[in-house]
Amino acid sequence: FHLSLARMVAVNWSLNCPWVRAVGCCICVVVFASFASICDYCKRVLNYCNALFFFVCACTRHYLSYNSLFGLLVACDVNEPVVNSSDRSTDLSGIFGEYILGKRFFSWDEFEKSLAEFQKLSYTHYVHNCSKTIPDARFKYAYVGFKCTFGVNRTRRGLKLKNKSSKCCNCSSSFRVVLHHSEYIIASHNMVHNHPCSRVYMQNDPWYRRLTVEEKENIEPLLQQSHSSDEIIMHVKEKYNKDITRIDVENMKAAVNKGISSRRDIFEFLKSRGKLMEYYSDEPIRNSLTRICFATYEQMELYKQFPEVVGIDSTYNTNKGKYSLFQLLVTDNFGRGRPVLFAWTRKEFKRDVVWILDCFRQIMEDTSKTESFIMDCAQAEIAAVKLTHRQAHIVLCSFHVCRAFCRKTRNPIVKNYLCRLVQCKRRSE
Image (cartoon, rainbow, N blue to C red; front, side):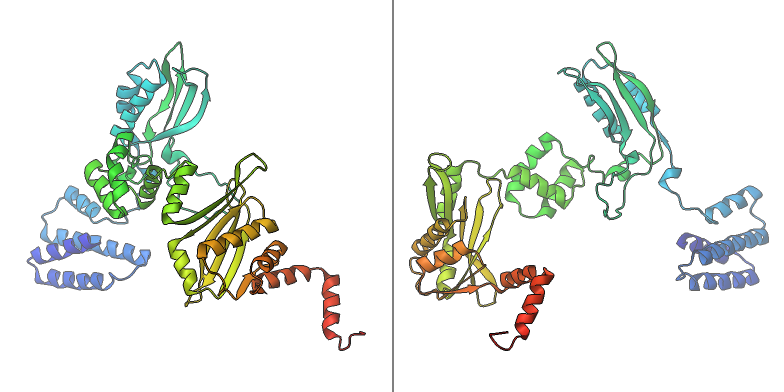
């Protein structure tokens, strides 16, 4: 639209006839005033006016032939349709014949190497559509059907999956590889794509921005040292000319940071950060670890600042070993719950909670300032607190009380009795 307006102004001032200049100026003003319109119909009308103006100017000056006039009308984008990816077709039969059809493959690795080179040069990506494996190290597949990644539609895995944009444009390009007499041959192929095969079109495809093993090894020191994802993205862009995303950087960092694998190394790491206590039992296996208690030095200082009220919370099935997680929490000046001790036990019996509270007393050195314990309705926790901290008050958590009360009142019979109980004024009633 800007281009058409510029052409109108240029041709208008190139004319020598004053009345044609005046008419041209009026049309330019109308076109410029209507530029803010977003209606497609108005834009189409303006394009016709633009073409009509060029026709009048050409007839007035008498310097345009019929052929140049037709080219001028085409250049004005009269009623230009929107070009979709389905209207563009790319035939890669030539390069496919050079790198795939013109070679013989006596192993699957040789074919994969040639396919990777073909995809890199043609800016395409083919995925497995169907295949059949065979028990052979040299020949992995009896046949494989490949299909363009822009022709594979995303399958829905849920009933309430949100509609997301998809890169699928129903591309029909595909080929089939078959094992025939100890070598792979191309049984059929279709190399006509209905989308552009260029770097710009493929730069956001996950396969195209994927780094090789050698490239990942080269940027591994940067992944371990740098905390900025933008810095890593710029480094990969400048060195390997690949556009990776923040999610790709996070996945590569997670793969590089393997963590600590052995129990001894984990315990040494925890002991360097705080105090750790362990308990070994002969059940279910001889000398098996059944209880762990841990608190950092920062958590110990936090408890000394707010020791009056301590909350006990337990959660089961938080790990693969199905150990129960216990947390002891305090409330800071901002009203937030802050954990001061973590414990893992195989069971949630009274003796397990007693051991946790004894460890809590040993780690914090002095728990006499704790006046109240807040907990849920678990009998093991209540009995353990009464045994280890007799001077402290036991307060039931309001959330758990309300949830238990609502669960009980779901029964209409129980709810009716409770309503009648509230309305009673005497004990005899």
